[in-house]
Length: 127
Length: 127
Image (cartoon, rainbow over all chains, first blue to last red; front, side, top):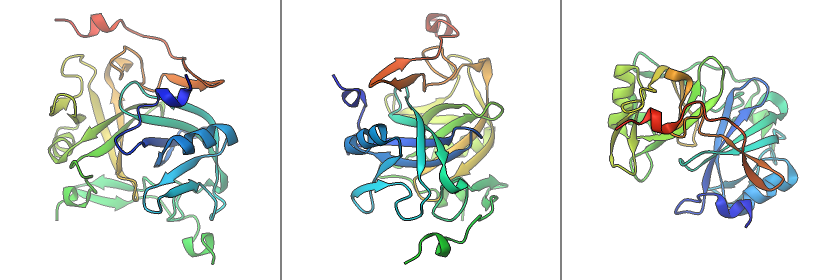
């Protein structure tokens, strides 16, 4: 049996995949994988997700260059999630140009943006 | 408008919530919150989830004592997830008696259990 058969794919045949910076421990992104994305991730050593909006494989960094080199893949006990330990190219994981997608923090009942933009997205996603 | 209204609840009115140990950076658990669970988490400072299997609020640690004190709540840009920075009581987050739920690691095409059981679950969940 393949390791792929042991993954508890949800009703959409997806699983959430958390990417964590292997050195800093910072949680960078949460995205989704289908069977094909996980298989390619493991084979290539680079994070490949399933884009629910574009309905196609999304090779992280394919436009931005901000690839995630995958050092480790873990599976949790029952909550249907993968944890990837990654090296984040460019130090930027978020499409907003920030290190992490979790840049809004709840402070006194409001979501406050607390992390800086490291690079203007218009410079990341050139036409 | 309440911060609760800005959360991108999914079709089941839930959002995934990642709990990360605030000091070690270890990713401990992924669970689900509904509006009521998040509101109580923020108010009480202790992680409260929505148990999809039991279909009720699940005050983490209510049986095990392994409560998660919540120091910080973050929201990501678009992937529908919360990130909680927590202090994990007992140093055990997983119902298997391990520190983290992510105790299986992919090695040579197999999910290998790589983290130890710190406490026998039968001693955690006493009748």
